[in-house]
Image 1 (cartoon, rainbow, N blue to C red):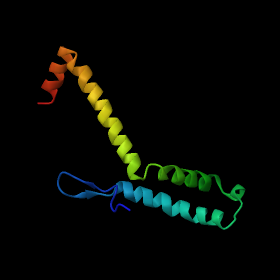
Image 2: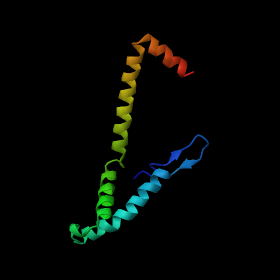
Image 3: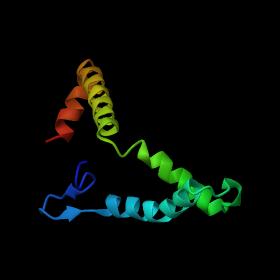
Image 4: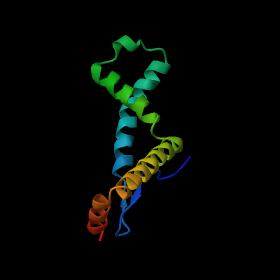
Length: 102
C-alpha cells in the first residue's frame, strides 16, 4: 500500500494533506455503516445521509488506486499530445502559445 498517496509537495517544500483529510472524514463516517451492514443490518434502515455517505465512500474506492491515477495521467498525456499537434498545425495559434509560455 502506498503511503501518503495523496500528499502533495508544494513549491516551498511544505506538504498539503487536504485530500487525505477529506478522504479520512468520508471513511470515518462510512465505516461504521459498512460494519453494521456486514453484521446483517437491514439496508432499508439506513438514513438518507448514511446511504449517501456510504455510496460516496464506495465510489471513492475506484479512484484511490494507482491504476486509476495511471489511467488519468495517460489520458492527460494523450490529450496534451493531441492539443500540441493541433496547435503546431496552426501557425498563428502556435506563435501565440509560444509567446504566452515565455
